Amino acid sequence: MSELRTPEVDDLLKVLTGVDDEDTAFALLEDLFTIREIKETSQRLSVARMLDAGKPYVAIEKATGASATTIARVSKALNYGAGGYRAALSLLEEDKDR
Image (cartoon, rainbow, N blue to C red; front, side, top):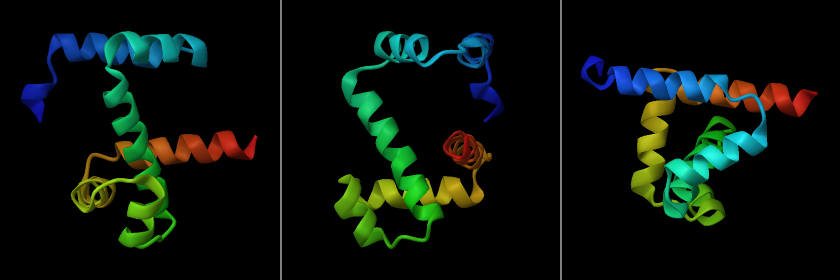
């Protein structure tokens, strides 16, 4: 994925890591992504959370509306990816514990 790591992507990373409040982050999401993209990305995070909790695909499909293909992709990334989902789930867990 090194070809994906461009100066433009690095700029996006700086912006994402620099946003420190939810309202600004939400405004950025609204400006950068379509409603559908926001919903699909949020759905994938929910799928990752349920997979991490050991839920079966059928239950995840029913609860989230995600396709089996999406669930499989998230599962692959969760288990063999770059660690982004794991980091996101850790952040959510830390936030829940506060």
